[in-house]
Image (cartoon, rainbow, N blue to C red; front, side, top):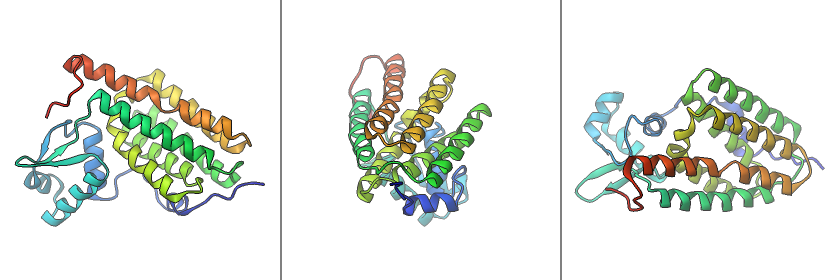
Length: 237
């Protein structure tokens, strides 16, 4: 039996294009992910108000959203800062992601509806074109859209929400490989493998496709971190 797994996330995905930020929180998230604000950098309310032509309450609301997404942290006597991940923290985050995402794959009824896998195919095509155009911000939003729709098939909405939260937290880690053509070619193939597994009937194939999609960014982040800071596991505040 074909699984009709359009749920709220999938319906929202069909109704909007996420290639560009929609809110101040999204715009700030985009700039954090792409290094406008460096890891560990302090973010000043007044400067954000000026840069984005935003009201103070809107900036504070955006800060609260990004704290909930794991991208900002409040520190006593220092204010709001961009989260600074050590390689060990990244490894821990990716360990949790593997547990959550493979668990969701195990709970996905297969095969998924052709309408859903066709939509994933369309997003994957646009994602590939954005890579060819070197439009890395569109790459980020399309990747987000792809996986939100993918995990809308999970029969546990709370699990899907947890996956989304951890995936957003990991975005600054993922982008370290965006300019690595070989890595991104692999990502394109992995997206196709996920789609093909969702069209099939083998849960094991889907779990394997999901598991294969995760580790490379964490390894690349560790290599880059150690190149910059040496073999330090403690975060520099």
